[in-house]
Image (cartoon, rainbow, N blue to C red; front, side, top):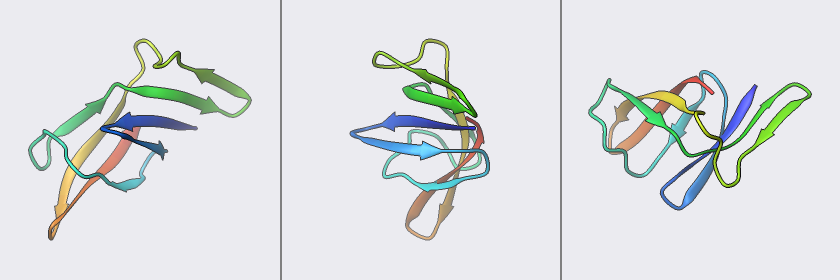
Length: 77
């Protein structure tokens, strides 16, 4: 299962346990962040495509800081 999310002007393909480098997130370190601009969810043969976003869909991630780089670890695409 994977999802395509949008944050800022960029889109990311994410799946569970992915680590992403994202420029700016308005969440404190270690606190969950919800990305609700989900463009697509694919689960095997089942694909859902938003117009432009899927209603009620979200991806949750934890914000982590590694030096000057912000990252998120994805929990549930």
